[in-house]
Image (cartoon, rainbow, N blue to C red; front, side, top):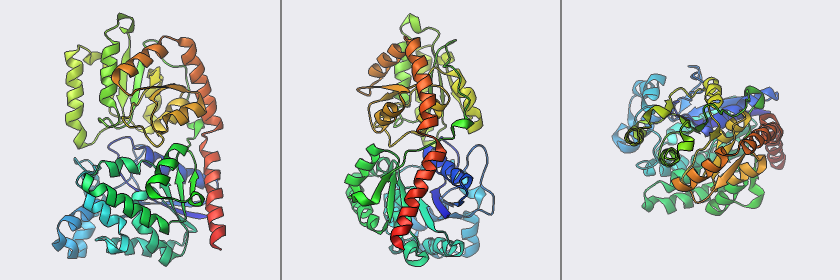
Length: 431
C-alpha cells in the first residue's frame, strides 16, 4: 500500500510529540513493507538532529503564507521571491522566531486554511494536489484536523480516501480569541464531512472531538500512539541522587511553572535535600521570558544549582536524561490527548506522576506505570511526588510494569498494523 502522510513541520526548537508520532508511523509503515512518504507543510521537520533532504518539498511555506494573508498585495509576488521565501534557510530561521507556533494572532490564517480552495491559499492547495496526483498514493493521511480544508480538493482530484489524525486541536483553537472560536469549530465540523475517517490517539480525545466536530461513530477510530520499545535502554530509576524529570516544551501551558513550584515546596523538607530536577524539551522565542522568570524564582530559593535545563533533547540524547531521573512529571494544566513522553519514560523504566486530566489516567491505567493526582496544583503535585518518592517498592513495581506494558500494548509495530487495517477497511468501502 502507498501512503502519503501530510504533516506540519516545526523547525526542531522544542519537543514535538505529534511530530515524533508522525515520523515513527512512517518509519514503522516502511518496516512493515509499505511505501510511505512524509510531505511537509509550513516549516522544515527537524528530528534527531537531522533535517529533511533538500529534495523533500515543503508546501504552504510559513513565511509566504503569513505575508500573503496579512498583505494581500503580495499575493501576486514573482515566482523567484516565493522560492526564496520557501527556502529551507528562511523557513528554519522563521521556526526560531517568537510566535511561529502561537495560535493567538493566527485566527484568520486558520480560518482561511480551513476554507481550502475558497481561502487565500488556493494556489498552494493546487500545488499540493498536483504533487499528489503525480505520486498516486492509495491513501492520504493528514496529521491533524486543522488541515481539514485540504480534504475536499484532494478527494475530488486524486480520488482516494483522506484520513485525519486527531490530537490536541482543541489546545490550538481554544487559545484563539473568543470571537473566532465558535466559528472555527463550526467550520471544522462542516469540513469534517469531506473526510473518510478520523483516528484519535486516545479514547478520551475521541470523545472530545466527536462532541466538538459532530463526528459520526462509523467515522472515528482509536489507535494509541506507539514507540519502538527496542530503541530504549531501560534501567532502574535513579536513586543516588533521586531526581524528578520534565520532558516537553517548557512553557506555562505544559505545567513547567507548576512543577518548579512543587519542587521548591518539596525542598523545604530536609528529607528531600538530595532531590534534583532535570528539565528538557526546548522552547520557542515566546517562552524565553517565562523561563527566565522560573530561573529567577529558583535563584531566590537558593535552588539554582539543584535544577538543570538540558538543551539537547534529540532522541539519541534522551537515554542519558532518563538514566538521571527517578520519576517523570509533565503537569499539563488542562491535560493532553495523549502525551508521547509518557511512553518514552515508561520504555526507559521511569514511572509517571501525572494530573488526573485528559488522557493521562487512560494511559496510566493501561500501563500501571504511574499514578495520577488531583487537583492539578503545585501543592497536590508536591504531595504526590513526596508520597511516591517515599516508596522504593512502588517505584520499582511501576517501573517494571511500565516497561512490560510498552512492549505489549504500545509497541509501534502492533499499532501500525492496526492502522493499516483501518486504511484497508476504508479503501474497501470506496470500491
